[in-house]
Length: 462
Length: 149
Image 1 (cartoon, rainbow over the protein chains, first blue to last red):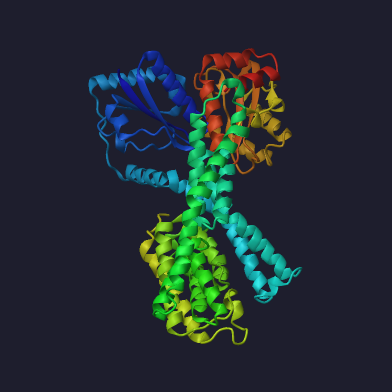
Image 2 (image 1 turned 30 degrees about the vertical axis):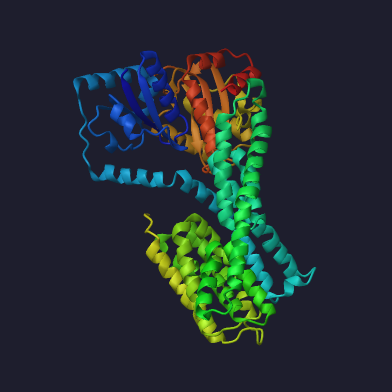
């Protein structure tokens, strides 16, 4: 059987692209041909032609009113027409393509600048599809929660770092808005919208529920990312796999999908992700407790790196809990290292988005501004949107900066008696010892984080 | 996502009054405005005309699908109109158009909506689908046909 591949595309990408695709497929069916049509519409590229398809094809039809890259069809007979022609008379178009194939007409592709440019564009578009696109969807929905929550908490510190403990006070209200509401929603939103991007609306419920569980089992935003992808792909799979008789199909979106997928995601989070997370946290806490006698600088280095690793996940919590525990024993050095190391991730990212704008998206550059305030307030979560969007490059960068800050803080013998508050604790007498060197440690880590990001993150094209 | 989230009986006009292309576009956009789908009628008309200038949306076989993607659109919606005597819409096959779908989507639209609109467009290619729409007696029947896509 002869095989033809086609690409359809139109300016708005809402209607013509798909009508042309359908016409071509229908005509091919009538003519007993194999046909695969790639649609480049507003939803992006669907039914994409792979190398195998193109290799097998006898001819290529491009029905488009936009610039479709022809590079990949080099050496094939190509018929190129307006998208309307495919809707109007697909059969004639197919005959034309077959004729060309029979005559052995091959299209020479000039690798001119324009096709190279459009090829590059296509490649970049590709990069933004798949898991990366889903992650970015989740991050962009989470971002406002991080900013709103972080700034509310920072504002509550203005009234004094312990003001929020006073019930009924404005500081307590701000903490309730930022800490127990906005930040509590952060990971569920991240997970929910990752799943939404994968499986559309049915993904939201299992994603958010999975994200909520990631929070409550202490798995942090990395656990939330796992929950989001799990929920998305599972829901998608269930949607395609479960076949109900027609009269019961209405039950799919309202009953079967949300219940089944939430149940499975929830059980996996609790029984599969939960125990190792708890194990990691307990193990790390024990390990740290065994280290109290070792080299102070090394301890600072480790605590610093741990603070930045998962920002609210088990590793970060183990370090933070260890520091708090030592406050009770009147050992103040590790707490100082921990707070400083928790301030540099958002500060370093804020600095990097200011200095190296070509390595961040416009949204990230804007998010860099509130990150300054979250950094100085010891709200490490300010770095989460950046880390979630590009974990492989951002997490090592912030870990390096935080490790250096932690080590320096220990080296300088800084002590801190308050477990939170960022710069708002500094004016309080006797809370921090060696203030000047403490500031130096924080600045050093911030600068190192920013330069690590400069090195690791690739330039983005305009 | 269901078809009835885009279109309902109020967005269907069984007998369009217009006689030419410009006025039928305006007539269809008026339906959208009456149903609170768009915020700025003039902006939507401008966008629709711009799209037509790039190439007619009269796709032949008696069908025209003017469409608008704009911030002046509140939600994805479809208005359907029918003209028994036909309107010269400057179609590709130079015949009169009888079935009109005005599609409006906001600049930022979700894939799910766009996929359903794509599905509607695919159906328009089929003779049966168009004939059923032409023969439908009332809004109810039109909805019945559309709900099956």
